[in-house]
Figure 1 (tube, one colour):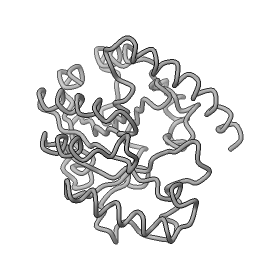
Figure 2 (cartoon, rainbow, N blue to C red; figure 1 turned 60 degrees about the vertical axis):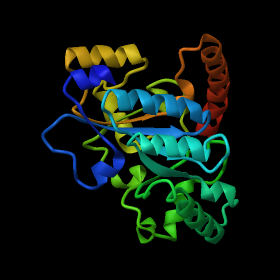
Figure 3 (cartoon, one colour; figure 1 turned 30 degrees about the vertical axis):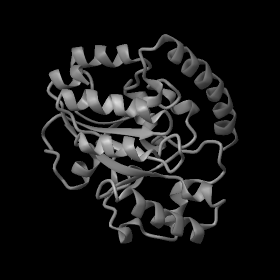
Figure 4 (cartoon, rainbow, N blue to C red; figure 1 turned 90 degrees about the vertical axis):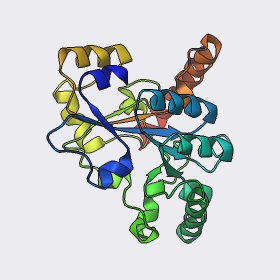
Length: 249
């Protein structure tokens, strides 16, 4: 983040972007964190960002590994945006009406910590239900939501970087966290980066796109060698399963 900041990028939350606060002719980053597991890692990330003057968007799931009130409150108090990382279709086994009721209930809950205005689908690769299908029948705007990244970002103008699969070019093993329409265009333009060092090199060379949405999963980031190894082994195994799922789609 410091390298991007030093290169002149401005940082915004997704809520800022949806409210039109990003300046069109400036370099900027929409910084988003999906809090899937190990919520304490997100607290550490939020503190670091606060110390260097960066605000980010933290999307929380309803599961206990993510939904821990004291941690959510602490991140909100550090000045970050809180959003709902919804997976209601999976939780409700594809029942759209029940999923809508579940969504509304959970949204009300997360609004006790922050006036939630944005949401983001949790990929749930193990589920056969796509969370975004909820909006084929219902309209999230009726709940006071102003943005969902997979619907409300023009990815023809916004480069997308995500650490899904524990790599920055993990779209080949991503079931749902990808932008398939524009992914091929970026590949053709050689705008793909495998490691963080690749991104740092592009920053130093001035070759990184000027408008980027970055999505990370803080559970993957640690300086603890044992925790790092566990995450590496677990994600490597997951990627093999996800490759099979992607091939069957």
